[in-house]
Length: 145
Image 1: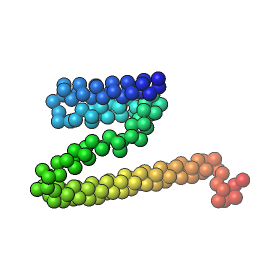
Image 2: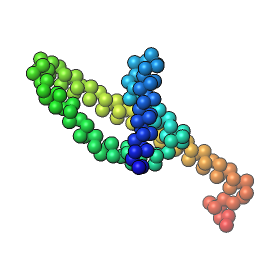
Image 3: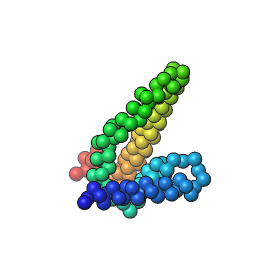
Image 4: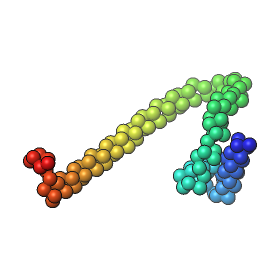
């Protein structure tokens, strides 16, 4: 029964995403609306992770199986795609490299920003600690025990 309830929640969110796609005049796929809605519900606490986790994990486990029909469809249309196969492979390769480089650079920026905040936090707290030691007269470096 747990899987039925979790599936109903996920399908309901997907349905709302489809409705948003029909109502909003933006070129955003319905799946993206659904995922954003799920993210907002989880982050706000309206929906708890354990309310959808088991079904989500199940769907992740069977995801490779869901790609089989698409792969078979590509294999059946290889003759029609033969003329554009090389340009398509070049575009896929170049775009993959661009995505990997961009992801790496963004990750480096995020890590650098996080390290900067940690350093500033540490420096601020060291100053506060030194100020409190001076005001109470307990400085361990000068033998105060």
